[in-house]
Picture (cartoon, rainbow, N blue to C red):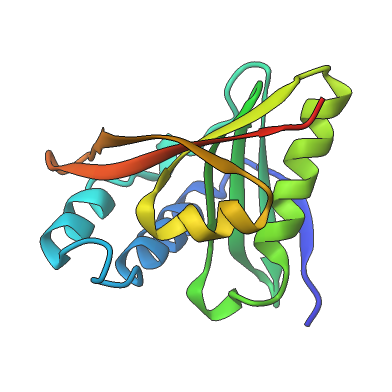
Length: 154
């Protein structure tokens, strides 16, 4: 299946919010309860999807719709989500390679990510190592266990 990576465009917000919510709610309840997932997915708004100054926001499209995104600022991947129907197509790995290549080009020595427990194995397969187990407040008010990971790239 063909897919393409492009920069965030105005008008992507609604599709990104729907994709983000869908990806969160598809997370296995072996990681988080249904209530925790609902809190994590709460409050996603189209206007919340922006490229931060000095950052990048990549969007993946396929079959005329948004199927993934990666938000990156400096040395940190702030969010990487793939539509559950598009898992296993190499999209997440390609987005990580793109982010790491940009970091390397900018002279960043260590890539970082603060991730959900459900994403830990993905980042470990990408070469990241756990530095800390922590917690992350959600838009819905609950605090979720999470993990910080890093990968030397410089």
